[in-house]
Length: 266
Image (cartoon, rainbow, N blue to C red):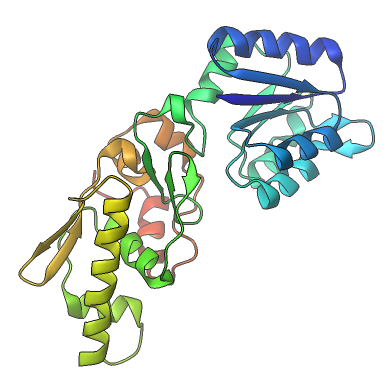
């Protein structure tokens, strides 16, 4: 795991780095003393986790976190601060954790165990499907690019159905909301399913897309999807849920509402 400790105090960065190195002795922990150094480092190389102070001369850690969200969305941010009053603002940045100084090894370990974006050596799965926040798919920690945007939405809907088979007419209704079910659109659904099967095969999951009499389903392990892990009560997945679920898809609003009310069956 690659971590970055950002604090204007050399003593504070060194102390936190020692804790991280005890927890992750095979990882790479770097220390910087300013926000500008942190942003430059995250731009030049992939960083899994940034431990970020909030009050620093000439900069605000909350603003840094927002910039990282845009420039390095796969980087987890863990705030480490002496000002607990920033907790609510920090939550709105979708940070992985908020630690109040002085922190100890248990605090840091819990933060690393409950990251919003999975890190390779803390998750067994090479494939990871993230439903909380925007729907995204990662393979070996890199975002997966889909040739067709509707293939990604198809996968998202199948994940939302949690392994249940979905018919072609239902998929037409979801993917072309409000438009009629035509032979052309059914043909496009079949093309999308084929594209998804090829994509999953490329991601080392050749049998994940299951077809049965014209219906289709997706099969993933609990540790390959934060939503599935959440339903199983996995602590890391439960902690990653911050009230947001597949927010780019309007059809996901029903599941999002049920999650918020605690009414999704596990």
